[in-house]
Length: 312
Ligand code: SF4
Image (cartoon, rainbow, N blue to C red; front, side, top):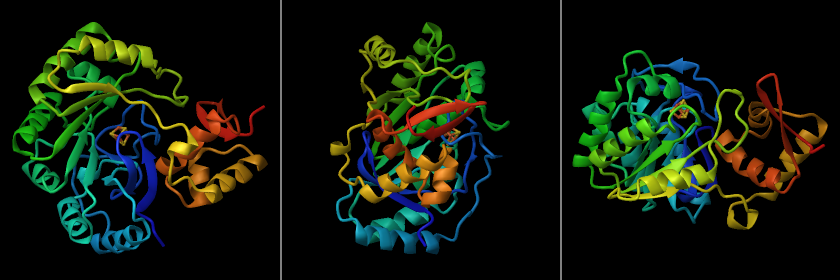
């Protein structure tokens, strides 16, 4: 049974991407207030071998043989992949299996460690995130593990940029009232120039947050920030979500029907859908986005929890 590989999922940032999830659910160095996967249950900065790498490599062999058209193999999922100390070994093995480029989505918090930079050096593309540079804003938005220091994190990303030969696309996630003030945006801009990524990608929440205090900003606001940073040496772009099924070449009618049939009976949370379909939420959200847009399902918030059900 395939447990650690998901998709392929359509991704605006990465095209058709096969996901690799190498840490247990919500094992992370941060507990971001906007996290789509819910609260971090294991907040840690300790690297570990969570899963036998052989199992992941066997699953990858199987999935790669079934999916010929992939733009990327992407380490992502519901936790921080650099916490897995076999990351470099697994990337080396992927490189022996396929020529498909390898991308790593990371929150960037462990890049101050040489061993993490060394692991990531084997990939083709790294997408770190950086939402704040003031310690108080960093704590508010990212709720880090106790020993993490934002200055050290920034130094780690700067160091990585100097050493790394692949591309770095830096994601900045904007939450209204937290990191969208002029002061923080100016500090972020100065830091981004120091990091010198290949691209900066602005993002915000686009499905209802379970926590009412977390407010997304609209695309217009993200465009204003992009304009404010227009002199940045890196290209600054606003991430748009894939919402049209015709744009999703891997859209599976079976999975769509499975989701629709299941929620017809009773509204369900994303974790219920994961358990029922056996698919990861990163994959399920692609379908949910399309089905919401087509008004076949609707999100309902009950006591700070998001349920998906038939539209009323
Ligand atoms: S770093 Fe990513 S996985 Fe970890 S809490 Fe933040 S958004 Fe969630």
